[in-house]
Length: 225
Ligand code: AP5
Image 1 (tube, rainbow, N blue to C red):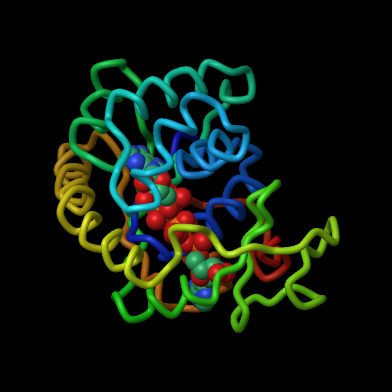
Image 2 (image 1 turned 90 degrees about the horizontal axis):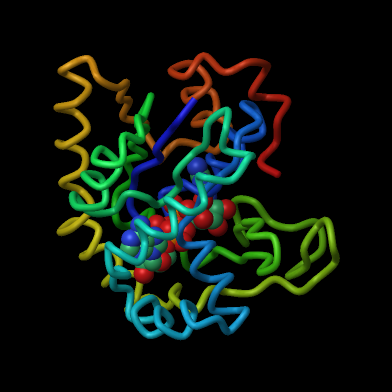
């Protein structure tokens, strides 16, 4: 299964990606996580993209497409993968087509802006693993501490309110056109496409995604981590 999760910042893509990937035993390919790892490691790529990400803008299409093409050559992608936060522009989506990388299903998670701001302001992450928490909706067992490692949780550099508003603007302008792009492919019978109400609870969204993708097992039994 080759999947794309589409949606604005804070929609819950990372949260739901972890759930779907556990169910299907496929890797979660988050371009945002790959870029943050490069920054944390101080690589040339990390140095190149840090300013752009801190400003809430998009990294250049060529850089992202090269990164993704290289990642999906890995063995763990043989049975499929889930793109979380990629593609984000029409040229990125076209690059997939040109490279004959077929997609089975696109899930669009829809969330209004006021919920996005509330979710992002309360988000805390475990930097090393990318595990996601929310102060109110999905708190860690011990305050500000990762459940599995005991490490301190952090707030992402691009989660400041001004940057979030810029990320939302960029989403509307550059990424939302992909909804029409993939709806047209779905109408032509080339892919599956489902719009999901992302304002629901995590478990309700898991249940809806399980239904449209016909995932195995009981979503109530999964938990978010
Ligand atoms: P990226 O890391 O992809 O960030 P994003 O798309 O802005 O999405 P987020 O990670 O902010 O949110 P999410 O939808 O995953 O929500 P989450 O599950 O965490 O990209 C970051 C940057 O990298 C970009 O700005 C750009 O610069 C660059 N970049 C990345 N990919 C690129 C590309 N392809 N091209 C160019 N540049 C690229 O949930 C949010 C919070 O809400 C959490 O606290 C969670 O616990 C909580 N939550 C989740 N679901 C629910 C729910 N149903 N109810 C209540 N709370 C919930």
